[in-house]
Image (cartoon, rainbow, N blue to C red):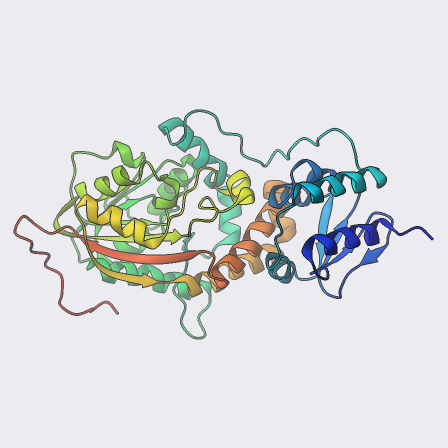
Length: 412
């Protein structure tokens, strides 16, 4: 009796992996092979055509986003099992894959990539291209982000304590940032990449500062302006649609940049760090919260780079510290928050699943599938230490070397 498509695929995968399948596979003919647990469902032959033309992560993502491939069971557990293998196909393996595809009737024209995939033009990290890259992700839909996040609209790692929920973790993160910056009434705060205004609102309401936030996302500016009016903060907080490269002629007592430096790019990072330092008064403090990654896939991998954050660059923590020191900062504290990102992302993922139909109504079925993949894979990357996130506290010393910093870690 001829083998089913599922068993032929299983045999090929096990030869390439040198061991059993990490997840089960069910094909369009209803047959299944592999272990109990998460099951990859190939709904049609086109699901394999995506992989034939784009082997690896990108092909899998395109098949999933398009709906030709699905996963039954725990998506995160499926990622966890599959990540342990991630083989590189040799020329011989690829030839065998082509022959198997022919036997299974998979051949055809390359499918057109889903519309949700970014298509940027122009030179990397020019002002225009950066606006397009930021717009691809952050201008998706204010209503969708409001659905996903807590009321603070903080789109960065929370700071979790025992029995905290997402709202408490985000409040505590914002409060920790304000304490590290030593904010007091009347001080001027600059938030570079201010997102939907979570830090601006918190710092003004609870610490009495005057603040300026800059972002190049048109949707974020619109949302922040509405929030400022709602909180009666229009006279003390300003939000601008402005690139960090356009900042000049002002000085601030404190500067924050929360998970924005990833979008700057490696070549532009010295200019970014220099701008952060230049905007500070002598003895002013910087709080930088930023994700980090080693030499492998500094952009986050093919899926992240095409669907989530095109042109993003993450670097090892040590390289970021070097950039800051070269710009004129003295590093005073580094606080690793990697484990804190796991419950943060999983809280967002749980919200997405609870409100799936609403999310689909806002950003479409394919868009919601992009986010399901993104959150499941992101939480696992932080859990397994393939990505990190840190709060870096730095100060701009004055001409005599004075920092006005406390001798003890009073913010802890």
